[in-house]
Image 1 (cartoon, rainbow, N blue to C red):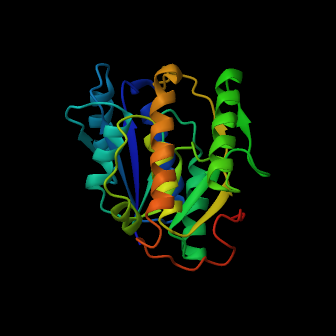
Image 2 (cartoon, rainbow, N blue to C red; image 1 turned 90 degrees about the horizontal axis):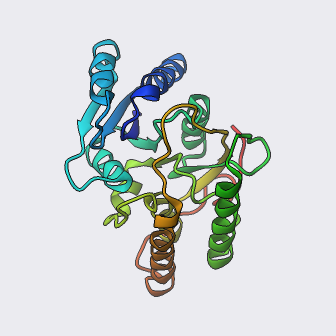
Image 3 (cartoon, rainbow, N blue to C red; image 1 turned 135 degrees about the horizontal axis):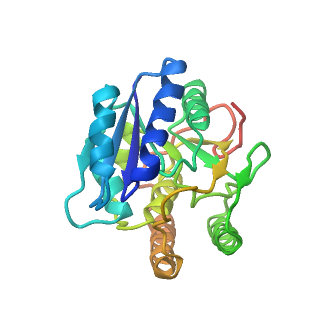
Length: 257
C-alpha cells in the first residue's frame, strides 16, 4: 500500500522545507511507501523556489499549482484530484501536525482495516501547545455543537489532520467547500455515509513562522452551511449509501496506536 500526503501551501516558504523533510524522514524510517504532494496555492513569496530545491533532493515529493479559484478548500481539492496512493492524509504546511502521528495513523488504518483515521487533540494521550485562547474557545464550542447535532462521541471534527482511503475520497464526491470548511465536510460526510473510522490522539503545535490563513469571522457562515448540509443529508438520504460493519472497536471508538 502507498500513502499520499497532500499539503496545501500559500506563502509558506519559511516553514515548508522543514515540514516536508520531517515527514519524509519519519515515513522513510518506518519504511512506508509514500508520496508528498504539495499544492502551491497562488504563493507570492519564495514557496515555489523552496519546492524546486526540495524536489531535487526528495524523490517522493512533487508539487502541483492550484489554478484559480484559490483558497484552502480549492487547494486541498486539487491535491485530492491528483494523488496516487491507496490512502491520503491532509497535513498542514506549518508543522502543527507531528509526522510521528501520521505514522501511527497509517499503522492504525492497516491494523483495523479502517476506512478513515481521525485525530483528536482533546482526548487522553494528546497534547496541544500554544493554542490561542479565543480560537480554542470557538473550536470547542463548534465541536460541541456538531457532537450534539449528530450524536457523536468524536470531539475534534474541525481538525484537518485526517487520513482517508482512496475509495472514501471517491465516495465523498461532490466536495462542496471552497475554504477551511472542507475540514468539516470530509469527516462529516464520511460519518454520514457510513465509512468506518477510528480515532487516535494527535498533538498540535502552534506555528512559529508565517501567518495563519484562517479568518474566523469570515468562516462562521461557511462552517454552518456545510454542517447543516451534512445534517440534512443524514436525515433525507438514509439508505442511499452502503453501510459497513465497524472494525475491531466500534466506529468512532478511540484506540491508541
